[in-house]
Length: 132
Image (tube, rainbow, N blue to C red; front, side):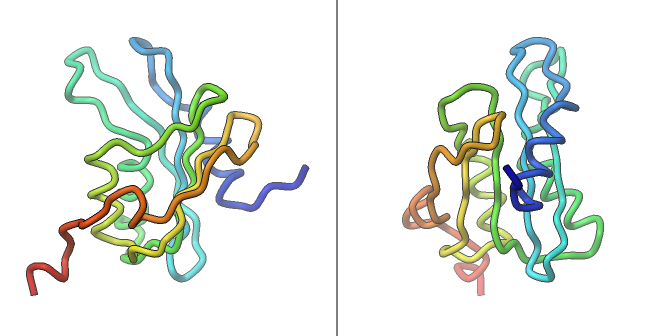
């Protein structure tokens, strides 16, 4: 099956996750408004709360490359169940994505498990417009 480039990036980067404690590898990819794709994986740390999520890594890569708008996100978790972004990552996505942006969760094999909008995952959100 030929997957779209965002799903392929999320699936590929998942293999590079550093998850020696949970053994739960996650890959995420964001498509910027200009069509570029940026990927990140979870990176655990012996000081447990200091690890980073895959979505945060993908967003950091996007920002480091100069992009500032997310068109969509794909998250590839480690089981057949949907791996949705944590609350902190939902807020990080909110900083750069419109509420109608699609967040797609896929299996390690690329099967689409669920698709939500950012508004579905973060209702009544607080975002950049609240500070204007």
